Length: 124
Image (cartoon, one colour):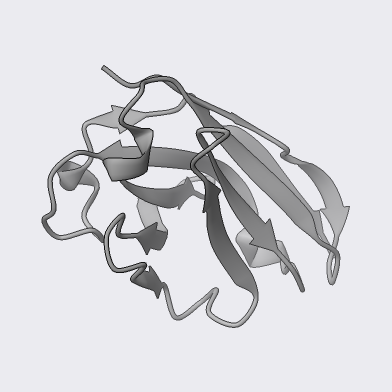
C-alpha cells in the first residue's frame, strides 16, 4: 500500500515557477513508476509526465515539454515536479500517481495509487 500526499501548489503569475512535491509512504517507493496528471476546470484528467523507475525513462506531454521537469529523491520517498514558464492553461489540480507494474504510463488506469491533488492557478 502506498499513500501519496501532494504539496506546493498555489497562485502564480504567468511566466513564474512552482515546484510540486509528492511524498510517498511505503518502503518500495523506489520501484514504483510515478507520474503527474492534472485536471483543468471542466476538462478531463490529463497526462503531464511519467517516470519509469528502472532505466530513468521519463516522458512529457507535448504541452509541458521543455518547461516541466520531474525528479525523485528515493531517500526521501518524494517525487517533484518543477514547473517553469507557467501559462494560464497550466491551471488545474495536479495529482501524483504511483504504479507498481509497468504498462501504458500515460494512461490513468495504469496507476493504483493517487494523491488528493494540489491546486495550481496561473494568472495572466
